[in-house]
Amino acid sequence: MIKRIHIYDFDNTLMATPFPERGIPEWESMTGKDFPDDRIYWETQESLDPRLGSIKPFYSIVTLAEDSARDPEVLSILMTGRKNFLEDQVMNLIELYDLNIFDAYYLSDGDTLTFKCDKLRELTEQNGAAEEIVMWEDREEHWAPFENMSQELGIPVRVNRVIDGNVQ
Image (cartoon, rainbow, N blue to C red; front, side, top):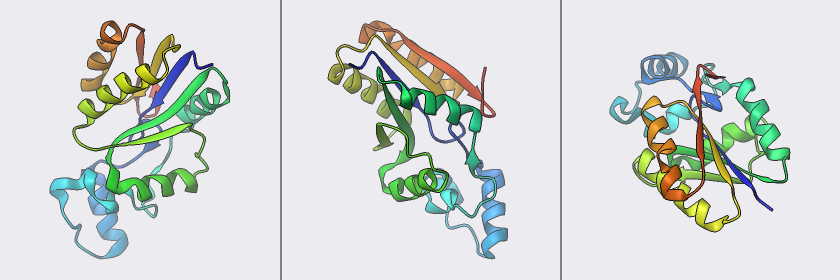
């Protein structure tokens, strides 16, 4: 029976992925081409190109995710604000680094915060016996909104703040 739901963010939580100021020049140098559209960097396949040397797992977080995946009372989830149309690129990186360990994988269909909050509601409803949600998240502007969902959901929502691949 599921007692806890553990949710891991992808970009700069589970995986180090370059921000545009690093990723664009790295990609351009690697390919000899102009980056397709720097205005929507996070929505491009190129930003997830596995040849980018700066894309790599944060093994401190991977270890925690592996522990979650082994616990029979935990529903372990990878949830990202990356759009659904980037599923192949996200899953290619997951497979490349042998991280196909989660019970479920969710990619966004819109605004990241709205998507993740809606998904928390859905997961709580589907897993009524869950006593707690634990999240690993790098985006500071998301920490309080997730924690504030505790009252609405009726169970604690605890956010592990991830900075540079380390829980703070």
